Length: 332
Picture (cartoon, rainbow, N blue to C red):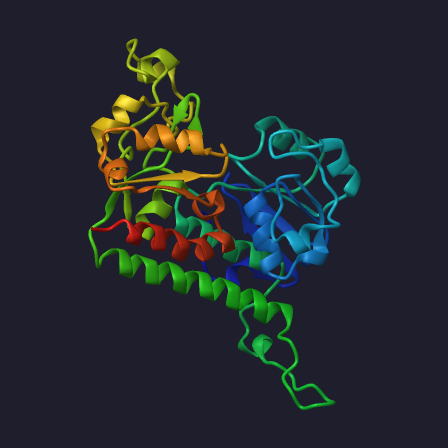
């Protein structure tokens, strides 16, 4: 990431200064009170950090926490944001993601003069650092006194912690969970795992992705971690020579389209079928269970919550334990 994981450097007097993953420097006089989030995982993180009342807009895919997102105005989808509506909401910051959101929408928001904070975490650690960055955006300092719980005057019981304490503990818990997962994954050899993200065409993920790193932290090894996407489609499917590197510069090579024969050749011990971005069905699962692979022979083709694999930030650290349970259950 392009910033320190600490809290202090973001604050200078009454200003909040943050650098996003495009390398753009943003500055606010005081923490933003009107926020539009175009990223489902960031919406989740912002609410967990105590910023529910600051969110004035979200996408239709920002569905969690379900009880909290109700009442936040919808501003289109992640790929088709309603830019005019967002501008009309007059947010002090729009939270976006380089991969999830349309480049054209981000450019239009930039051109409208809005501050667009763009993230692009490729590792779970990047997502934790981004969670800390969001907390700093919200103006939560690291001062130990901010965490003190004042006694309620009527009963002498502790009052709810202030937002700064909630946010700080959320970030600290995320760092602790990540460190614990790093330590734990060194204790046992990883299981070879296949995670498709689309069925037709069959697509999976390269090692340079957040999903692959989540697998690694949970105790599995992505069997396609070394498989880059090839262009054109026929080349990705082994039916034509790939374009030379100079012809594919600037294209994302991290989501290859693969064949079932390649899946068989990679011999995964476990197949995880997430419910997003493609909602894998029982019929899809039956196809993988029919393959001559260790996962099928041992009954280790499982459905899983896609949010556990793909939502970075606060949600990812909650999902790690669930992924680990599934993976550990498939061990010999």
